Length: 392
Image 1 (cartoon, rainbow, N blue to C red):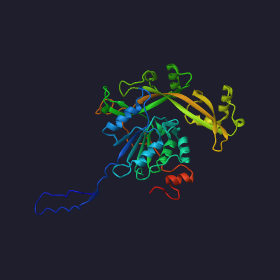
Image 2: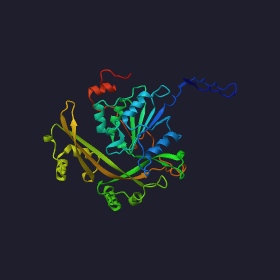
Image 3: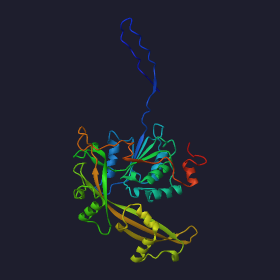
Image 4: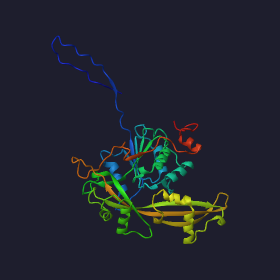
């Protein structure tokens, strides 16, 4: 489609005035209409203190600037998202332009969204394993292509580069996966909680930790925050005493758990480690460098973790028995949240600060190269280096 540029006219002047040159007509391609967008709300709120999913659900349905044509709120797993995109092509016949995925998450390890229904939470480790086991089938290029942007809305998950890279692979190695390096949340701009007033905020965050068995005191958390952020003058107690905001500009806090899971299988009980007593379990943790490396990825000190051990008896395909060791580690986190509001006096009171979506100071993006994966998986995904791309 072409747009004709208007002709150039000149007023009639004196007879001896030099003639104006004739302007050439320039053909300008029309901008392509926007592609269809879709939002996946990947959970349900467990507390009225943190209505993250319900507010996001209304926001992407009602907000005039960021609403999407489709909102899906019945899925909980990444495999279901990929499956939905495979069987629900965009109505305009082109690949989707924007795919929003809204999931609780943390910059330490993972997302609340599971990899498969009933499976592990989505982390770099669980994604790599699921891709190696071909449990994730990506949408084809008619649904997702190199112009598709997958926007992962979580809590500073843009700090986890490996997670973004592997999510890009799960989407077929075509789309760009984007996530904020800051905390994200949604809040009412009006005091009467009008759904039309919900806005999308970014925020600075500070973290303190405590052991699940001991709980925490306000004084202990403030002291820890002062040690962790010695140059910061934030009024920590104000935020620790506020779980719900009176307006979107206020410092408040949110608590959540960071879980880690370790699993091993042993062919006989004779090889199963001795972890029956508290002392034996401490020795197991001290002697297992790989387990400690898993916890180190969270950047949470070991003393804040509660560690529980479980033994499982497994029946293998040949009817023989094996014995599984499952170790669940969990630390509690207190997150202080300071929303970023617009400083322009012309904007409505407490309007959110909105960075440019291409600003790498605020956002991280999946890298164009693909992580090292088994050849069979590269073939399935149609990645560079596979013999025959399955999707054309």
